[in-house]
Image 1: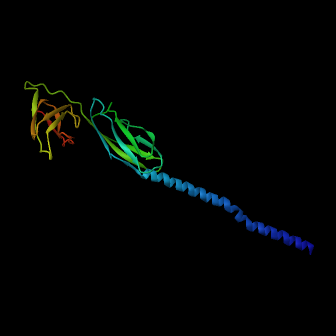
Image 2: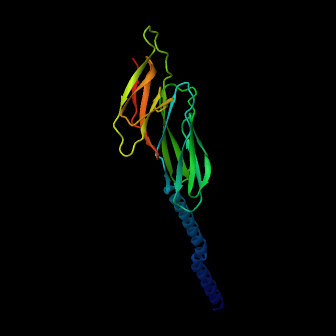
Image 3: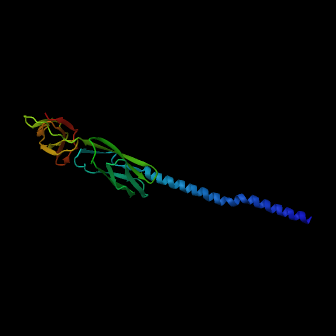
Length: 238
């Protein structure tokens, strides 16, 4: 009888322990789930910072002449709608392209400056991308185009005059116009000469070298400032 009583007590004690064991592990499992939840929430917070990135320019285009000077640098703003500071990185995927800064902290707005180096490049059109990232959760891509014109060649020798003229005609600008400015150059959007004329819609440009191609654009101006340039036209001087 005494032996049976000890056995019953031992069996009952082992049964209670075995039933309590799963509950003893519950705190550890709870903290594991809580840890995973915290990591997941933090990841979503970082993603929302990246998703709020915007820029004031969707692309950048540079114009230059083969063997000439590098074009001026350009820039654009990166905005974040989040009040939480984030690490911003900027990178490029072409050796002729450079951005600055490559790493900074953004809270509201950051200025990214873009540089182009045409050394050793042949004439043609080059395309690359600038990638903007906030943390590791997403990115924004800004396409960059470089248009490199061939180096101007010397005109062929000729007993005829070595210079000639080109006559430009344009539509009158709306609003108050004081006059117009004619821009002249030997590469697209790279002008080396500016001619100011009165409020007219036609003008003749002189001293243009025969055999060379020239590019022209026109702006209107008044006391308040100057308009954006017109579409560009080109002409080979005969």
